[in-house]
Length: 340
Image (tube, rainbow, N blue to C red):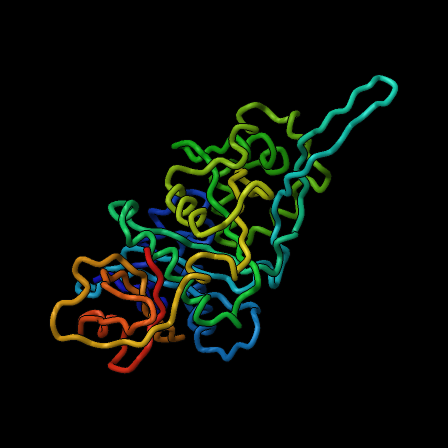
């Protein structure tokens, strides 16, 4: 059974293996043991902390095969984007250029550097092994962390954002970066993202143009790349759009990928999930039902799985002993669940 749980320092080597295969642009998963170790340590401290409002905490989860102990995915949540430094985005805007005398009235698409999204909670670090991309476990890896938010709302902001990796070719070149960022840095897109992963995005973002960029002046390839999704990030995009996230207002400052945004209370896995009591059955249960994401609602011992259930709303949910053990719960406990 695949189980989602908080990452531990003992997972470092496995996490680095996952990071090494993540696409260029996922700067929150650098292929660097020291940075990943810092990420796991920060997550362990966040899970252990007593929190009454969202601050600098970050929560890093892994998807583990409970039989082999092998990790097959990971994902994370940052409680407050830009807590210690601004969180930069390009805001899509429309400027009006008009001449009454010439009877000309033009609307021009422009990009303005901003940090409007600073303070929102941020979904990051999504990775799932390629054979699982089109499986229900990609849903678990992405949406399981939303069940964690639903279980601990005081730790997160009223809105959630996520940067989706934009388009780049097999050589790691991005048309948007080449048209915009490369004019300010003598490095290609892959190198810029590598530096961001090892250090910080802010030091590069601060050197980006602070005046509006008129989109019609950009090369066609750069314009076409705006808001486009890297093929390996499409699964993340699709899952979150089904969750109620919206796009079009912001894009990433480096590769032009879309930045999704949603009110926390309106996210499907949060709004539609329910807390129900558990009944443990010795016999096999749930056959012929539908698949649900189920979590134990705990903090440091958080666990989430996918189970097929014959659950009737308003009634207790029946779990096998195997499922209950995977969730770390016993008879009389409660779980939070939502349909896949």
